[in-house]
Image (cartoon, rainbow, N blue to C red; front, side, top):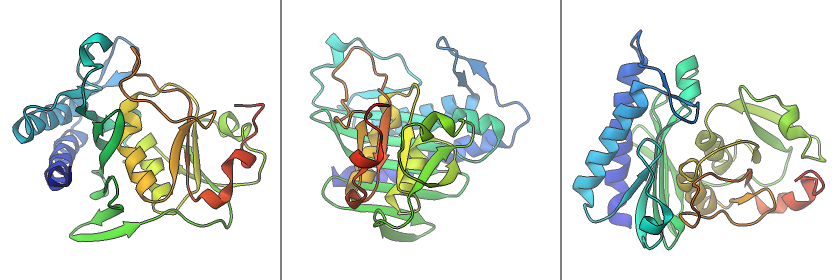
Length: 263
């Protein structure tokens, strides 16, 4: 597991460079997928970089990516280990040119994330973790261990585009907010203690949480569904996540802060 970490960081950064090359172009190759979500040439370019790199790195480990067809459960349910990818989390933010998009790589073992890499191309910042070895943030050549923040003023990470009422109805506490684009980047700012909680209401895929989960957990937080149950990976026909919650320091006692009648 640890032997894969640096190669995955390098792959995520290469995918980030492919994304940024298209980010500067007038034509980003925007299309609409069958589920009516957008995809761009940058998503596909990053996907190609990751698939080729992971095939060379570990040809025996299967890959599940948002940008490739997902095999039916009967063909993948016995996978003991696989890569879970979101080549560009935050396609909508890429289109809007907010800079809030990320490359997500996770390694899943026994249906749980054990390695996570999230690269933020616009900032040239990479978050990473492996199970049992802590969570880190790399800026340039500097690695800094990160952890969730102890209770002070509750800060909620929110989407730039989602109405705050969509998530505030779930909280029975006063809070500040910090706005950011992609799901995985909001999880990362919780892992590094800049926010305390993120409630995702709406459709996401398992690739949106795989890398985030191990990074947040190794930083001292957790990710669960809206009923505080563990998230599952590769155990259902659908790869769509339920509504989920990213939580920081456990002393916040989030079960008391989030209204049970709303969940």
